Length: 474
Image (cartoon, rainbow, N blue to C red; front, side):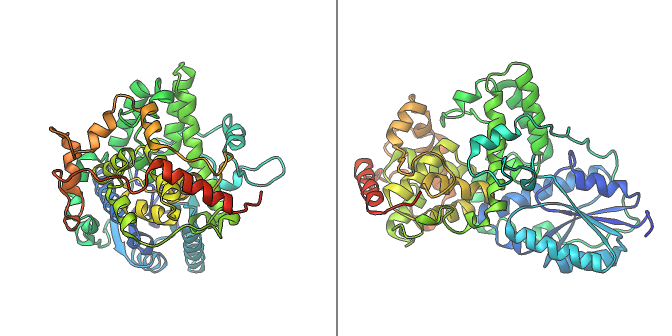
């Protein structure tokens, strides 16, 4: 097999040029490289917000590739069929891609690899999405970690390879294969009018992601430990959306954090811990894929959560529960596509504990509405808060949104930013919520703010009573 044969670079959630092992391997073959993104079932099944957001990322990557004299080829169909057809079309001798770790992706990639090799086409996958791949991290007895803290201690001093530089050039074929037009995919169709509101809050593409990381390291990592819990300020890195689509690599983030740690930044270790928390989610998804679809702790299977799409659930989705912190968080999500992590915990706790609604209802709604949606982090976060997931704390922990807000946003900036009803001069962000949500909801800033669906005291009492009735096994 000649070294001058073209190589296909199958792109998924690695939409960047820097620190891209699959791209580096493809360029090293010596022949032309044909980058391709496939609109397969994994893309078709995305929720409204993540599908729209990945479309923005593809547009940015296409421009970055053109600057290198390359192109992004877009094709639609089952990945196996598209890759086999495209490989035959261009005479490719190899296909390289970055690994994913959810069960559907593993099954698809295994099938693709076998089909390519059966045609005597080299097929190689690479790590681009994680610091530590799940099978490389084991407990002292050889199993996987079920609790975060010991995993952190096991990996915090490991050597992480330095990020790779982007290729100086990407060899192009003499003739490019045909490509779909990104606009014809209508990636933002399900967002409807919300896309125009949400667009202003996105940080799209590799250059923007690197700028965001640089600004955080320069100004935000020092006070990160305390600031990250205050939803009313910009106290986090904001890189979740960029990591989700691979616009920046975790290795780039890790080494930037390490440099800050060595330079004495007080919040650096806590930020590195958050990067490993993301790794922990992938660790669990790989070793216990059931976390995506059912209770991680099976003793919760008979717990009496409701899965009905009731009027109360609709009000939760609308951000009209009558609990200001919960409602502000939901409205932040509709306007920006993201939600502060402290707010996410309170939103999830109110749904699963005060309202006694199944975590799968909330997880599914987040999968539709978050531009930084990540399968592993979303599932683990919901189960962690609901009490049925990987958490060393007691399952009967119930967040109180009032005291949480008093503690972490004592100045009330978060509510002012996102709640319009009852205010003489609502903020622009609070008003933009009404422009982002479906018109069919018929909401207006002139509406009265609703009374609580479930008061905090009543909801806590009801949840504790339900826990007492249920006998949990250790």
